[in-house]
Length: 251
Length: 251
DNA sequence: CCAGTTTGATGAACGGCGTTCACCATACCT
DNA sequence: AGGTATGGTGAACGCCGTTCATCAAACTGG
Image 1 (cartoon, each protein chain N blue to C red):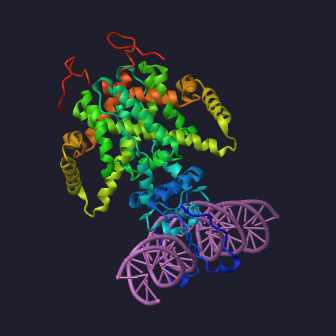
Image 2 (cartoon, rainbow over the protein chains, first blue to last red):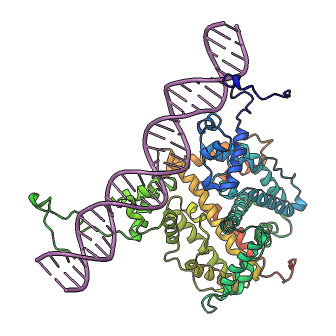
Image 3 (cartoon, chains in turn blue, yellow, brown, green):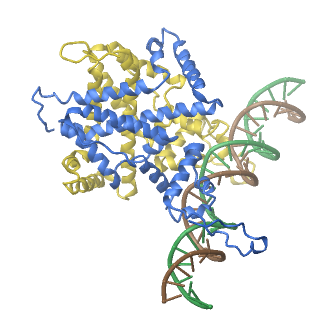
């Protein structure tokens, strides 16, 4: 685009336009920078000033593109759903479709630090998110779930998603505090927790001791799948609610 | 305790000890004041300075009893469980016990404004909360749930609790913003939302339109119960896992 | 009864925050 | 070439969490 530009001769330096070829500020660039800061500092360290610094720009410049920090957080929240497509409802495989939705959602939430906290703070009822909700409801309803169940199923699922990812975030934070990185200290931490739980007085905490292994497993994946399965099974139980005929059912 | 004290005569006013019979500051008094501020201002308006003002005390005085705001929030979180007793596990009625637990938990979360947000921020793994967790696990395990399920059941349940209460809080906030109070405007707001959903273009949002009535019901109680039921059913499905008619699922 | 110590509140200060606003440099239009 | 819109600047306001030197009252031992 631009020809090779020689560095400006010293004597014309003062006349040179300082902000010549600066990349213009846009909402997208701001959101990108916000994610950079978020991943580096966490949500508590995400300030308008830090974002501005990341862009080497004055704080007040941000407010030309973003009305307030709340709006910035909302834009970040919307990134969660960018290019997040649900499949056309297939009544034969609705359970797998739900599972895939949940797994993809969890993956997205874990992509950025503290993302679950941001997600929690925003109700998914803004206009441009309604299509996603519609697609989710489509899967439930065409699967044959009663309407009264479909109307809450999304809530149950998404609170589980957010809540689980939030807990994972707490773990990740605790890991970050201890200087070391890599999977080594992760394993060590889980082992420590497991040892702590296992060492509880057996008479007062028999069940915690018994489950200590499962509560502090090396990876959270299996726990996530199990919790997800509980919900899917609960939903599925409403299919044959009125016998094998699978009738749609009112209140 | 104290005899009737006459008001000090004016001329001795200057000699009078100003801080004589002042109630001493305690952690409990601070937490109480924090809840007062919380209910009045919401979590975003809950600042150390406001709490101090509520007690007509200098901000720095708080730090003699509470190491930081984080600790204060933790103390508030612990109030959630004060006198919160779970029954001895009864395998015959484990489902009702779980339901009661969830209902009581929701009620507690709704007692104070933004309480769900505070609850979300704290993992229930601090030492003094382990007994509660133990009691919950006791119910699951003595009911006969497999260990791998019991180990996540608490998570599923409590994320649903917190998440649902959080959403209710968002509604309550929106209601607070509109000046009016009482149940009148509540109804009106729900009606508005329902109308909005019902008025969506039917071709693009058939399911949302169809469920508009159920998504914006006058009270959230029924929705809560339904979501709770999904989870309870999901859990129950693991009881007769190896029984007749159901597909068994190992791993 | 007094001196000394401990206790616990005070108020000023520091640095950081979100947000606003008067100003100003550049880029475009006529 | 001059005028104007666009969009960034920097200082300021008021609030925040937290710290610290100061100080008054309350207990203590002699």
